[in-house]
Image (cartoon, rainbow, N blue to C red):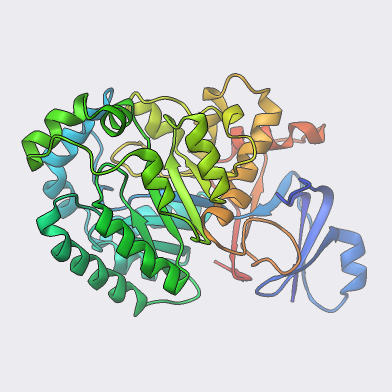
Length: 407
């Protein structure tokens, strides 16, 4: 057992517990939290790290939605319009994937770890990043993605998906968790959706899906018109959508660990359905801004947990969750800054754990001992300013603990 102390302990639990001069006793899971001096007296014979000045101990950050396969992109893809971006992805996909070799992806993962991310939800379209994800010290929920709308190709697409899923299952461990991603309502044939979700139910796997990221997607699903009409005509000879948004959501019943990413165009009816499903919304504010999509209205999703994702470097300039939190702090101008900062830290810890179906994200007894220790540049005088100070001033962390081990 170990006792780690800090000037501030931020639990990110349901009551948003904050303890000044606090500590956590842990092995691979959290045994007890409390005031450092009290814990030191109670556990006199364990390894102890005293609270250092201006330090904060909190749960490790969870990046609930990230694509690693496009990690080579810097200036190649086109931003400012969703359809222009999508067309640029298709035009440059093979080149970018070829550049994103194991060495590059491993370096990006290492950078995320140094920035305090201890868990990621990695969306994998092809499986090329699997080796790097297996070998990182971080926890990885590895979402094997299914995609394709052509009826005469569904058997081939399903076989490819199940092959990748089976390969990931052979590497399953405490830190590498095979799971399933449904690309989106507009890009997955109903047969593929049904059969893939049946596997998820049988094996109790986490499931995630992109949902209503853009106005173009909404227009296509509701009216079979807009920017996606020419896209589907040109690439697939298709003039009607394979489903509607509500029909798509209705297929996800009895999925225990479920999240939907973006949801910025979701209606009240669709948000109600997401809430009924017990799903979490993965919020990727920087990606939404760069592709000129809406910003998720956090006041519209009351009663729905949300998490923080960076999306991939195809639609972001950083995979740092702290960078993402800073951007989010500046974008949601309708919420008071300290209140928002607290919500965002909870989303990037507790919310991420809920999205991925993990026992992490809170400094609470019996949760996994995944924690970060960081240093603020000066004294925080008032507790209410702690969350905003953490987000504004943290780029790297001092200590990283995953599963009770200092990494």
